[in-house]
Image (cartoon, rainbow, N blue to C red; front, top):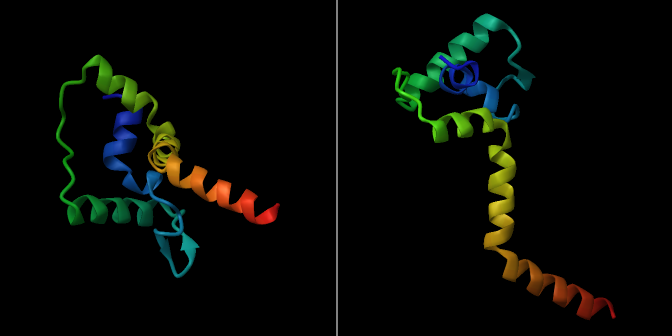
Length: 96
């Protein structure tokens, strides 16, 4: 199995923001704690850990998994571009 795919499936804590997963405001660095937390996340959200066949498009997404948050950010910018432009216009209008 692809190493990146294994990290996505079995290590969900690796792509969750560190402030959302902490123990008394301390990051989880202990391997045992990390393993238990990952298992709890997989069970809580009923995430699939079954082996499946990969096609070329899935491999592309898996290999670029770390770019996914940036893609979501830019998609949000694109979706709200009119509102951002409108607010920018009003800010320039008020400052002049």
